[in-house]
Image (cartoon, rainbow, N blue to C red; front, side):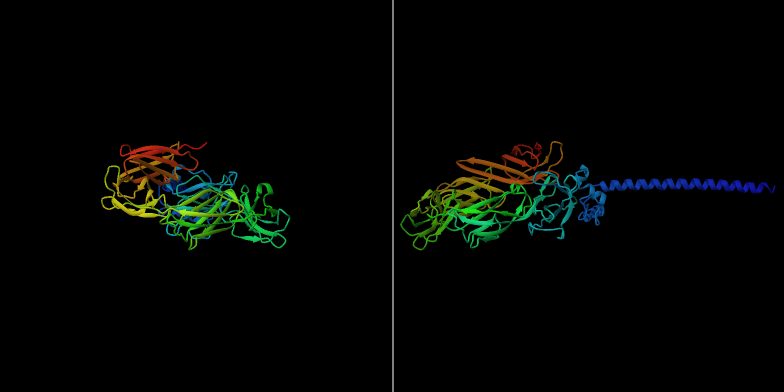
Length: 550
């Protein structure tokens, strides 16, 4: 009996151990299962459409996008989601993720179209009140940064809606490429241009071998310039941008024909530090003078008017102004046969053009008579295509006879307008703001005539639609243009509206009148699509499919 008691105790202990082990295994299995379910729920949660304001994970991604991934693909300190950001440097992102976010993407390439990895790209949203800023860097407020991936691709995500400026980050040897784009574009191409300084030097002499002093030497549109010294020598530091772009160096001096020399990096060699350019300039020994007088048809002197004398062949241009007696003088004019004399006298006179005009070596004396402009009047009605008045519509009336004459025309509550004391002849009505409305074939008469009818493309109709590619994916088209034209009784009215398609491909035009309209849709990398719509008699929601360029 005494021996059986310990044996029983041992058996009971073994049973308890087995039960405890089984209970522990079931608890561990249940906990692991719960962890898997939580991870799956988190994945689903991450893929649910949310804005950056409600998704803390995307806030972290945006905050870390400044440091992102290095050109070598390593995680840089500051990136809060290194794996997620690293993937976004390449095109390997899902369509679902792309569509749910406001993005801008594209490629960084060189001048020959080769992709460039490891290039830092900056993005800055344009403040509508401040407008574009030509220069900004990584340290400026609101600037986002990312490096191009192995294939040169880059992608900014979680952006606010609006317009952005993109640029290559400031770096030695790289020109400041700058581009303005709308959110939703995924085919942006940022071209990286190499930039370096080259010292151009040499001497300038005449065709007779005389060294020329005080010759102005400039490069392209650069504001810096230099002048040759007493021995005709000069030194000019020139900035070159792009290995495939030439630079012009100009040489100018009174009494000599302008000379220009071309710097071609492809011929001179890249990164050349110095280049010698010796220049010979042709003497203009036969410079002459053009004088004259300016009067009107009644013989009165016309003073204070600007006259322009220009030669397209010689690339010469001169200006003179008539004095109180109507006299004018052009000094040091190079003789030639293809000059053009232009006068835009403004109010009260018709424009004057004399073309061609020969200026001989002995000089020229001109007596120019300006025609007086007869005054007349114009009246009419502004209506839509249904004949209903368009009240309060404003347009500018510009004379085709006198370029400086312009009057603002506004229709009353019945769409009626009237203009008095306006130059007789052809005129054009045009809006000064967007959308553009234009009316041609308008003629101002010296005597009162019947009011004309001007038809305007305005009304209650709406045209909206989506732009897609051949696979049915949305295209953020950067140009959607809608045009309209109507002719009646010799008066031709037209309108032009322009918008863009957002990242979902959506666009809309409002305030349209009825009738036939033509639309052009274009986007980088696609052929321009053209189509016609009879507004009011056809569907007002459309789908535009763009064909990719080969």
